[in-house]
Image 1 (cartoon, rainbow, N blue to C red):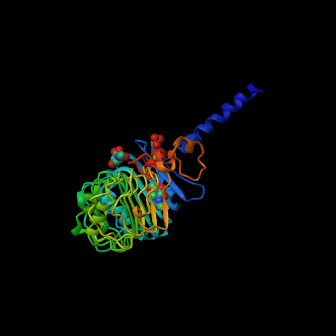
Image 2: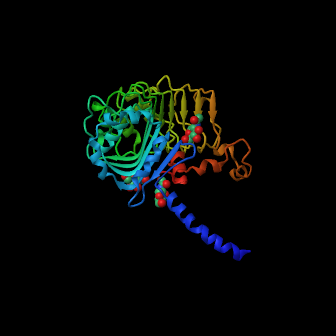
Image 3: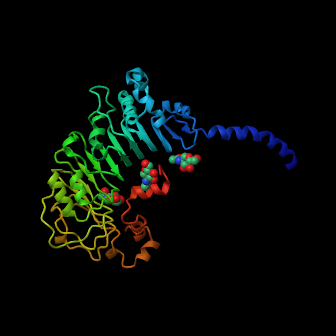
Length: 373
Ligand SMILES: *[C@@H]1O[C@H](CO)[C@@H](O)[C@H](O)[C@H]1NC(C)=O
Ligand SMILES: *[C@@H]1O[C@H](CO)[C@@H](O)[C@H](O)[C@H]1NC(C)=O
Ligand SMILES: *[C@@H]1O[C@H](CO)[C@@H](O)[C@H](O)[C@H]1NC(C)=O
């Protein structure tokens, strides 16, 4: 029986081999035609494989760290030639990662997508070489809702955001900039982000409160509702308060989790918090005491996963309707016991230490999954 199977298997092997060679194509689209992922790591990739992504809603392109210099000649293409084709694309989300890209090519891609329905653009591990040209008066890039950048370096230096912004149609609602090489924007050149609701500067451990003051250009973020500063080198809530006041930024929600906030209880300079601020996240901040000078009234305060040794007294806490104190030592006299009974309703110590201080959940997850790394 086994012997009879062997020739049969041998007959089957060549087509199987061919099949595996065919599936090693750089781009793959899922069965629902939703997500298409290209990985051009191969030294001589088949670029035409990207054509199958034409019908996808979400496209992810990994350049394998290569330079895209060879495509710079396409930067002169007139986007009008392709306008009907681009209009027909279903593309909503585009991620471009791991490549060296000349600035004229990047803006040509943006311009080319100007008539598309692209709303979410993510750039990861990119080195943008050369300077960003001045945009034309017409044929700008897409009207994005979300722009996310992680570890993107710009030869243009501090002026990059002002220059990039000019290539996009207004309307951006969410801007995420992580592992930035420069956040000291040239405020005079920056246009007002007139629709921006969320600014996320997480995972910039070298930013600090001084850097935050430089990044929050005064009056450029008039509609900001949510400011996220996870793992961003913040030191005290009052220092952040001062930076917000200097910039005239008035968020409703502020996330300071995953910063080593020192628990200065005395001598914290008085600062007036934005009156709209109703949610403050101070979790994973290494706090041994509730810091002084917090906003007097908040709806939500998250103090979970700190080092509070006793239940804070009422007068130490701002007035809140939703307070989270899980994962503090005072709740877990015997932490090891809680680890054995994770369903006790209290966040066990292990859930707090799993995401180490200084590294935010997003980074830990990204590293864990190896995604885009
Ligand atoms: C950042 O991106 C560059 C490519 O531009 C890459 O070489 C480097 O490894 C990335 N750094 C991290 C921490 O991922
Ligand atoms: C506070 O931040 C932590 C960690 O970043 C997150 O897990 C938690 O959900 C946040 N809390 C609130 C109330 O949003
Ligand atoms: C791309 O392919 C290379 C080699 O096959 C692999 O090592 C790498 O993890 C892949 N990258 C992504 C993001 O899938």
